[in-house]
Image (cartoon, rainbow, N blue to C red; front, top):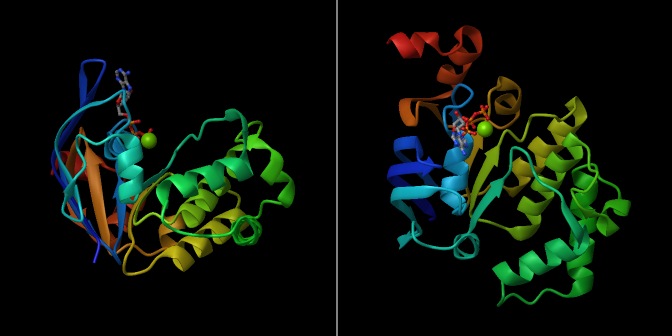
Length: 245
Ligand SMILES: Nc1ncnc2c1ncn2[C@@H]1O[C@H](COP(=O)(O)OP(=O)(O)OP(=O)(O)O)[C@@H](O)[C@H]1O
Ligand SMILES: [Mg+2]
């Protein structure tokens, strides 16, 4: 069974410490939600986990017994880490189909999947996230609408087959139908070998994908751990009651 153990993780950028001391364990077959006010450091945690070069980090990130803290983003991706970005960026001149195929080959060098099979899988899941085939020949995220970018993050997740998935506000910018499609893809992909960390501000995604664990990040620390009830209370009352507690 897959297991990600984050302990004592600190991260700073441009000399400012954003994450101070984050410890969290996510096992395969578990869905964790991460909530917290704007600027709390949620996206920073995602970046720190995938090894974004702009951050200086301390602490430990163990994935299935392998220490990732000093590994490159590529090595972490090969170990099975995936981040669906809050604001995905455009990659001009790289076709979506080429991007997926190249990334897949890099992440799974030993797997033999024919071009046709990969293409058919891509087409199938494009449909499942509500994108038409014309996207295959477009440059990655170039001119994509906000919602289309989010749908493409989910397409990457299902195609690249990570074992630990962080989704950073995947629900933001999605219309009602897209939210359902994305939730369905997540549910279909989820299994006992995959752990999820879903960063969100809202219940609407958590209603579709029920988290077993809910954490609250504030000022660079996990200040509350709970279950669905915690997320419901936050939606009702915000974060002030946690601040004063
Ligand atoms: N280069 C930088 N210099 C100084 N502070 C920075 C820099 N980059 C990010 N920050 C700060 O780090 C803090 C955490 O940002 P982060 O994006 O992780 O927040 P978040 O919890 O994801 O918020 P949101 O809910 O708005 O997405 C913010 O206060 C942000 O302004
Ligand atoms: Mg964020």
